[in-house]
Image 1 (cartoon, rainbow, N blue to C red):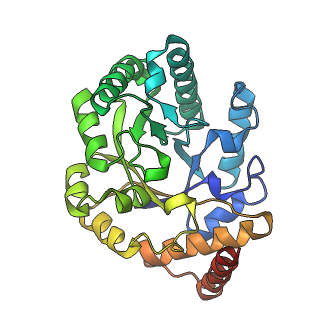
Image 2 (cartoon, rainbow, N blue to C red; image 1 turned 120 degrees about the vertical axis):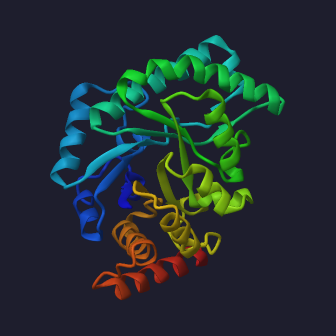
Length: 292
């Protein structure tokens, strides 16, 4: 496994200061959340914006793995039946695929989504038709769209790993891949061994996260030790990306250190030299957050 981190761990639109610190914790890859990276993401980026960020990551010693958080608001499957909305989302995702390619990334993780007033069966038909039109348009980019299993606050369409797997198999296109994450799997109720067995050899990316993008290891809702066992037993060779919110301004560096130290110790059996101090700082942050 190779360790990556989402830039959601960094303060919004201000990554230069903390980005170089990621490699101290064994991070080799960077996952980019566009609307957390560029203030002008909704209006359109220039090639220079993309090149400058790619260069900043390169100088920090990081390989960009891909994008996630592809929409500002949850994707509304019902509205995909409306021509203007469908065209807007289609164009946005195609543009992001180009940006992903130009950054040197591959994976595009589509997260929050809702089906609106559509019955579930109808929502599946609408989404399938959208993807069958969209996917051929990004195939030449070499990017892969993946639907993330969701926790309940993040949406109500295709929420479980099994449903994402079924949709990917039904469409059967090279530009649609499989993605798993600890928060979504912990809330989905699916037997984890069968999920990992089904995804073996096909998994594009794995997220280490907590519900609500809380500090990794803080909620008690995710059995990270068990997830490590599943990843190791499935011989997963790819990127695992840590997705965690940056938190208040005075805690950015400490939260980053605490989350990544926890991941190193739990998933890679590599406690860092100052790990005990950083984990204690993480515990202090957790106590502070709970008290507020």
